[in-house]
Length: 429
Image (cartoon, rainbow, N blue to C red; front, side, top):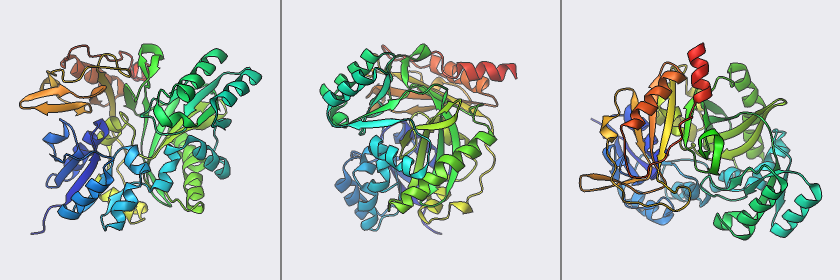
């Protein structure tokens, strides 16, 4: 009898818990590890006390334990070149190279690649000097979206409503370094109007397979009030990205982007996240991630119609066309419970209760948690993502909120309007 596969998932957030859950769902006998993991992954895998950015430590662990597959979850180790390092050491690794991960790690570079590929993007201007950026905005007298060029844990984008708000954003990101060195270069982009959607593709360097479409909620409060966060909830499917729209996005965005990255010498293998604004002129790219989104992973992964491990191995081998997924069925909505004060300062070590009481057709993905003896404690800003499953978005949303109602920790915050418009639409249908 052959030995079960050994798989290491790198990362410790809700996305990595969802990846572990999906892998365990598809391959019940797998020997699963997570580095560093969290309180949720500990129930599915063996947590390894190594930070995701500890490339040398993770490589040494792989040298010793010989996993059959390593799956990279977060952006920082990708940008640091973990895929190349592990590959050079002989370890089969799913994720983009550091060169390809620049599609997320540098918004200015991503805009240049899109322009070369003919991919629709907003008018963009990059500045290394915040004084020059401010002067340029004052001369133009227009409102711009202000982005930190580098990685900023989802907090490096500010969408102001006024010219003065644009200048305040430049000051915060560029001068006061509210997201650190990610703001050393600023990208100012034309502000677009329309609903947002995210398309997820599994890519093999040349070809791709769309694995889901979701809509997430970045602002902290209801009705998109408050600061940007890493994401306060998400749902799938998204009604305004129908089959025809999806084909358009594949032809105008994903395929030409992958072709241009190959020409550039940075073929993209891994999960590609395409963030879009659905404007009156058509879908326009507003951001890329070189990995699954969080919390979008918590709604996309439970509905996959194929074996994720088989698909990741196929992508590594350049044969995504061999994967023939079943049509997605049903809907999923996820509601994030965050620590009071997030995305600013917040307490950790707060006891969490009710995680086991959320009921059927509900999944609880842990992000900022840790275990101490028999207790589950908060250990981050975004603590839990409660995912409801159903035949419609309305049903999934009701289950997500019902599940969230069972969970309690001091000063927990959540949005109350996740999927509200889509849920009411599915109720009317």
